[in-house]
Every structure is written in structure tokens, then in C-alpha cells.
View 1: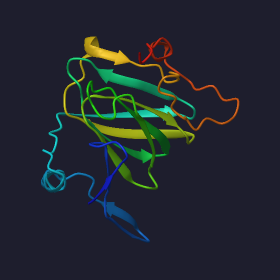
View 2 (view 1 turned 180 degrees about the vertical axis):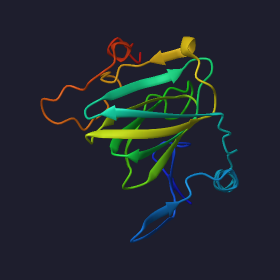
View 3 (view 1 turned 90 degrees about the vertical axis):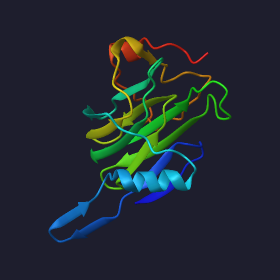
Length: 181
């Protein structure tokens, strides 16, 4: 597994080695000992994951920007079908990158995984007809602890790759999200 740093410290991309031939492919997507080694090379402790979720979203669905207030979750995101524009916003008080965002295309084709440490808001926009996403979490989902930041907050100014004239499809709660300030 190859570790790829990003512009925001602690947000990491991982590229798994893929063995492909005319029959298909095989790829190891997670091995705790490998994560321990790669995080250790950065002087970080590897996360422990306690929950795994899967979601499917149709084209133009935008989910987020979600976070948990008192029980922040780290997440390891990967796409197994389709393509998304995955976004994180640093909401860690006192962080050198507080308020900054990072976007990355994750797809079944590029097979990249993004690790998002606790203390970030997370969301994504589905770019393909549909996308299936699997993500591991470092803490359990706590419905009463959830916060949602507006996807189009002017203070953050995320450059979502929306086609001209397309309005993203939001859930009711995402449509009523609060501003970053």
C-alpha cells in the first residue's frame, strides 16, 4: 500500500496495489499492520476502526458536510462503484489549517482511499450515474451528536465540480445546514 500526503496534514490518501489480468483483479484494501507501519512513518498512531458503513448515491446527490461534535469520527473512504468528489473541511479549533477544505476524486477506477481524521466535516458529490461508497469509522455514529455545515458556505468556498445549471440533490437536513461561522 502506498501512502500519499495531501495539502492538509493528517488527511491521507492510500493507493492499494492491484493485481489484474483477463479474469479480473485482486486488491487488499485494508491491513491493520500496514496502516500501523505507514502512520508510524509519519509519527502518527494508526486509527482503530469500530464501524463500517456503505451508501449508494445517485448522480448529483451531495451529502454533507457532516461531523460529530463530541464524538468526532475518523473515516477511511473508498468507492467501489462509480465516482465522487470527496470533500473535507478542517474544523479543529487551533489547527493551522482550520477552515480550509480539500477535495479529491475517489472512484472505483482510481481505487484511492482517503483517510479523514477526527475533527473534520465531510461530504461528497456523486459525479457518475451512481456511486457505492464504503467507509470505516473510528467511533460509532451518534445521531444526537451530528452537526451539518452548509455545502455552499461562502466562507469556505468549496469549488464543487457541478455542471453549469445543475443544482445538487440534498436531503432535507443537509438543505437546512448551518454556516461555518
